[in-house]
Amino acid sequence: MAMLSGPDALTSVIGLLPEAVREVHRLGGPGRPWFVRYGSREGVLRCSDPSRFRALQFTPELALASIRWLHGFLRDLAIGGFSAPEPIADLHGQSIATVDGSIWELVSFLPGLPMHWSEDEIEQAGRLLARFHESSLAAPARAQRPGSLPVELCRPVQQEARQLRSRLENELADIEHESATRGVVHGDATQSNVVIAADRTYRLVDYALAYHEVLLFDVGSALWRNGRSSPDAVTYDPRRVAIFVRGYAAVRSLAPIDARAIVVYMKCRGLQLQHRLELRQGRDSTIIQRLLSIDAQQSELERAIAEDLFGRR
Image 1 (cartoon, rainbow, N blue to C red):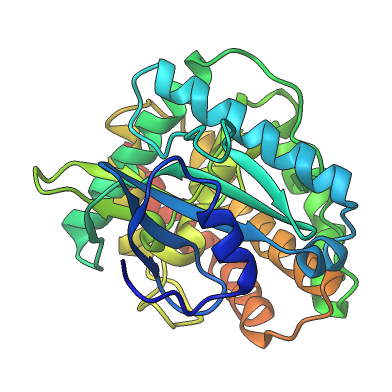
Image 2: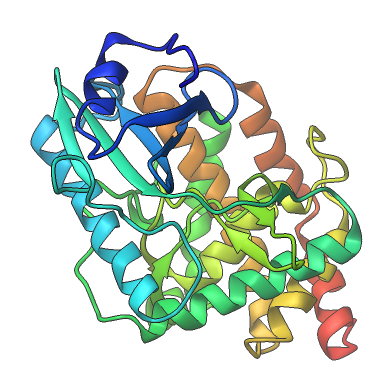
């Protein structure tokens, strides 16, 4: 077995598994989940510690209810045949365990290579998100996820974000937000959370932010990253935005009004991120920079989507 260099709690969680651990390592830097191989199985261990709960104003009970909700949804996806991480009941017979106040989850590992930045990959990622939405709509209906932050509740206090939010009510009315199709969204279906299997199948991973929302919000949320000029840019590339939406529309048809709605939901994602940043008292000036860029480029982005899908200027 690989040498364990993580927190003491990890050793305790490893001890809950039914077979000897052969390998364990982080899937990325600090704070990222752990890959674990035990017996003939592979899984992913994720830890949510109490400091994270408190930063988001979650009680331990609310945090546990939120994760249980997520595991229920992931099981529904698996039953429906959609390839996503599936809860594994191997932590003393459960997929969730609380150790020293931290909540640990065990889900299946989806092997694959990271998605990169090519236009073909961006279009395929759009198709993948639409397929996920089809599966989400086919899953049993469920109540809102405990502790979620839907569009209506996103109200950051930062001055520029607050001003933008005050104008958003009319935009939400214009795009018929209240009557829009809803289901469970991924919440962060960006290039960072897509892996490509050996057979070139695209798969979504890391459903930590899933909750019940307007499905087109998920498109805007994905474009928060996928639509940038480059991964670290604070401006957006209309062509990339249109290509991602083209992929989505190849699976789930869109209406002309949706070109505007998607860009409005890109702004909603920025407001959501800023709201969460304020809850945990963090600092990240790029959120406001990107939010203001989308606002400034709104007409350009809407036009690119409409021209690509409908030939409209």
